[in-house]
Image (cartoon, rainbow, N blue to C red; front, top):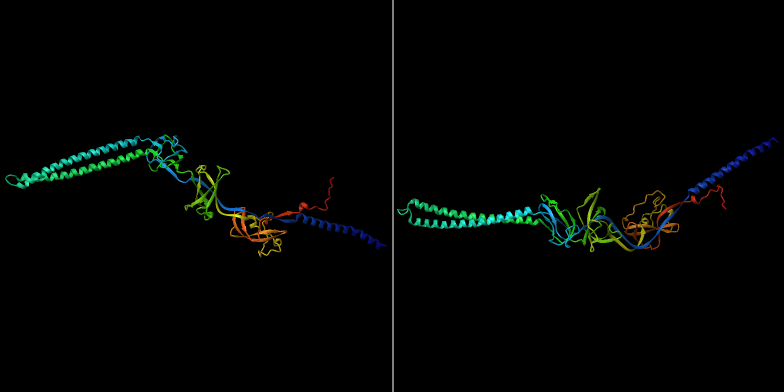
Length: 452
């Protein structure tokens, strides 16, 4: 009987421990299942359809509108601005005035230069009078020389004798020589008087030109785009010619001076089509063409920039000088081409298990190369694909299949591609999304609340 008591006591002691152990095992199993279900994730492919359309690869830059030909009108004399001239419409010269070639733009005080002209004219008259006097003196000396020559000839016939003393003979000879010298002297004086007259004429011409420079005239037909002086202002032309007016010959033909990065300038050639916009005219697009690339590069923040000249027509005079233009050089255009997003050319599957068993591309798939949104991988920048070959992945049910393509133009969003087994409407993979099953998982041990 004691044995039987001990056995019953042992069974009563072991039964609760077995039940507790089983409960713990069940709890651990349920907790593991719940944790696994909570953290399980499913991967879904993000896709886009292959479309057909036009794509343009362009280079963007910023430039400034400039008149195609500008004339800077300056002053060659000093003085005070007295008045402005009249434009084509009879109004005083101002910004935007249309002027003809030869039109008076401004008048500088000419009182000093007019006095110089008067003085130069007096010097000319004085020179002319000097010529007349020198001519008369020469004629007088020539007459005296003739008389001296006749006396000397008679003295030579008589010779030193009782009829002509030696002293008189020598006197006639000396008078003859003096007369000849005086003729030569008066001839030189006449030449000097003529030279003085020529010098006086030159001084008069210079003074007259300075006087004429007081009247500022337009050298070309055009439009005043800048007036840099006011009435009463004094201009000084001692070292540099002061600029008074800036005239654009023809505003129907404009240029854009565009600063282009050295990495892009090699793709721009004369004749490249250009489109540009201006903030002053929102929603309006203008067209032009590249003219030439200037060779005098500049350095801006350690980046070499080249200036590209772009010609643009402006028949309605809408475009204004010095507006900022947002320029796009149309380097390449593919029309009616198959287009895929640039992300499709960058994406690769994160594991080989996602590649279709029917794929025969022979392309190795590396772990962690996929373009995922939750895997912590940094996305690559959108840019024109380098090279002419690429790979896209088409969706086939739960798998993906690689397709080798030849890439064309890209606008930064889509790229034109060519492949034999690619058609419009097919789904191309652009990424993967990880969706957690936590939202759809319920703990079986949590009491369910029934709402009525």
